[in-house]
Length: 512
Ligand code: UN1
Image 1 (cartoon, helix red, strand yellow):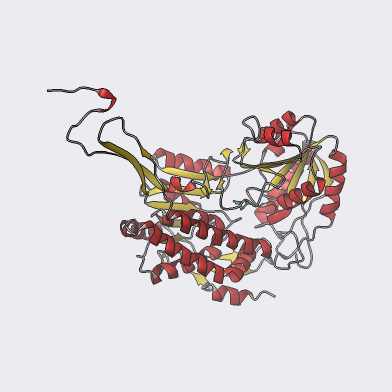
Image 2: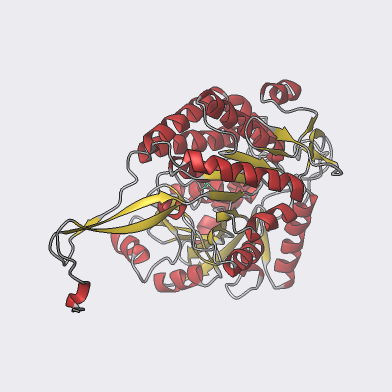
């Protein structure tokens, strides 16, 4: 049983919450209205948040600018030690914070905890990274010269995050940015500001205990306008934005116009290719979690299954059977597999997509629809549905953030890869096969064109250790593991002459 009031209280959420924070300090913009945050679980308000205006944003930027001057001089391993302590606090709060993620966003409790685990994992990664911000050294062509590169902090990193991973995506950015010596201003999704407030409090406490100045971690609650303030502000060195392709294009245009740096994590239209050599049990499990997990609201959710014609009918029947066993309902009840969509707009988007698919000739295999009655009062619970489609249908080219799965049939693997890659997005992809030739072709330059390409696992649920992101309309950004940290730093090449002559490079002579 989840006691909502207790969880909110334990995580420092008030009935009405202020609009911005620079750490310890919280402020409320005058003349702004408090908005209720309504839980998609039951349609009940959780708490209110006052959205910031330009004045509140300005306070945060000025504090962040001052903080950067000090934070950048902390030794990186010392910054890592502080991030380690943030990870410890997240461990302590995992249960409650995960439950708040479920309450505010509607994902299952298991996935809410999983999201907090991702935050803990990235903290651990960042701690190690704080001693590994390596640059290369090069051999100079000139005698008695030394050449090397080093990585310096960038400055202010603006983080625009989405409702579906309300806190994990912030942590992928913030923890890495912090060990790199940057300061952060976070604009969480206007749909999920409460989990953000809870995380800001956890981080701010740790910073304070370690004597870190105000402003290293800033939060500005707000909508689209707040995101625009970040995008056009030349004081913000990097804008990392997660969300729709439409949002990403507008952020990229504004940041690009001032030649700022962007990191974009936008839409996906992720497919699994199931070949005639697939282990069908594994293909079933991978497809199912990918398509209905988080009610289809991950950017990595499986949207298309591209199935070999020889197993198409068999697999289709098994999949439909599995869908019939899915339990839809309160995500805090661990019996249920599928929770609600985030809000009624999302439900409308889901219904519209199904109508469009039908109008284009799609055949319904598993019927969708909105659930009504007891336990479904929020109006946000929908049935995961499956539609048989053709690859040239327009709706199949689009990302609909809902549990709608499109089935497509193929003959040769080249054809399957062409279907998979034949969409504007390029985030995640997978192949189910036990055949080595198929695997290697799929992972070759002639294979998947996505940022993530998996074998015998689904499209979602990436670990933090790899670089996360995708190509084409997904935006090209990489965050989280591998060397994604380089986006959060500026590279400086240094050439040092320790000799008594000053020879020019390329052997150029310049004598007086
Ligand atoms: C997202 O949906 O924006 O790979 C991120 C996954 C998760 C992250 C998804 N680790 O499914």
